[in-house]
Image (cartoon, rainbow, N blue to C red; front, side, top):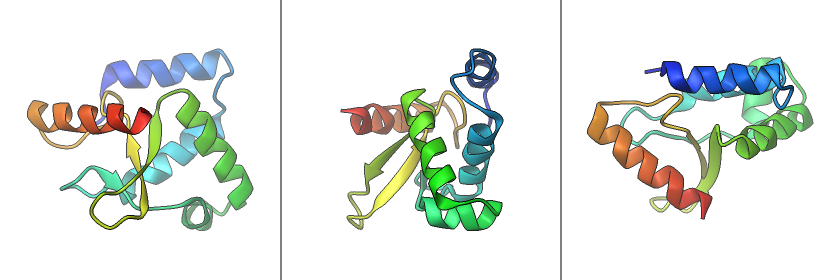
Length: 112
């Protein structure tokens, strides 16, 4: 589910030129990789670049910008020890309000 308030923040970041359209495209490219049970996306810049027909360095730059704007975070997955991406649940989330609260808790923990 995409949330109106979160989209407004993305548009605001675009207008202020903190994000570029390609950064939003990278955010959108992460979305199909989100596991619907866990809310985690096990995808890296190389795979996203392949999906988008972009260079991995451009995708990495966009991922860093998205992290600075708190659109997503990169964190270590406790289950398998690998890295994953968590989308900000106030922009895009899965499940109902309880699941959204759990995702927000995970998102905040990843920021620390």
